[in-house]
Figure 1 (cartoon, one colour):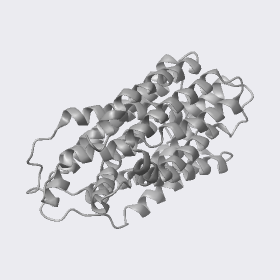
Figure 2 (spheres, one colour):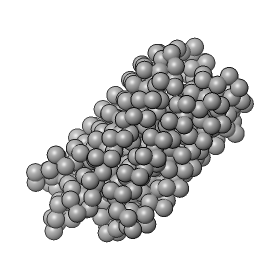
Figure 3 (cartoon, rainbow, N blue to C red):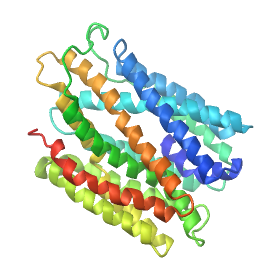
Length: 363
């Protein structure tokens, strides 16, 4: 909720600090790199602390960063709070997925698609808040700090035993995990491009887009991706990962073509709507496949969870490599024309077609 609210307010932040597209690209690059550092930090600390403690720490940092980002009196404070937010985002991303994977193992069936569906619902709430408060000063966003503050007090799944003694002991098969990770890179490339540059696309490319409705690039995308994720558990169980991913890749490429060649802003919004249904389940299936490959067949669930925690934290780095492609490459290539910028993920998302086989449960 907080993340999507911040990204859909990027046009307001760029106006407040008079940022060019290149300056915004550099800020996003900084945040993405620090998010990757936060994920690495979570991986390192997971050897001696469980994911529940690390998740609370990340949420506490977000609670501190959001008000400063919204109310910063000078640009230096804004940039510093954005850096803290980046580190916290990486920690929360990694540890939330550690929690989800551990629960999926306990259930013994696919739950990560609908698990990520809850993330999408939060995104819809964040975009809705932006639309409802677009007439207010940007500082009003500071009140969103109460959201992570409340969440960090909730109960989480704790690792049983001594985390230091339960550190991963068996060799991890990184090669098949790498293939799955490349699929997640492609997803986050598209996902970040839609979140980061979608609102700016509607503002810069079309002169008649109503002011205050730039978040419409994100809302339809979230609705369709959320619906696909909530239906994903059953779809994957019925048709398998490979079929779902290949169909989704083709749909995503066609949707981005609609965005790139859209003659009017409503057509572009339609493209973002279709895009979400194409790529919605790639990320949850990526985490599920990586954990399945890493987990092996250990009889000791504590050892298995410790190793999977370490793998998920490192696997989360693919998230930020994709985010770099989506936020930085799209912005750099589309510096003069964002249509060209969105043509990059339009072509690259087709890479999911040959990678889909790596997600199959039989493998």
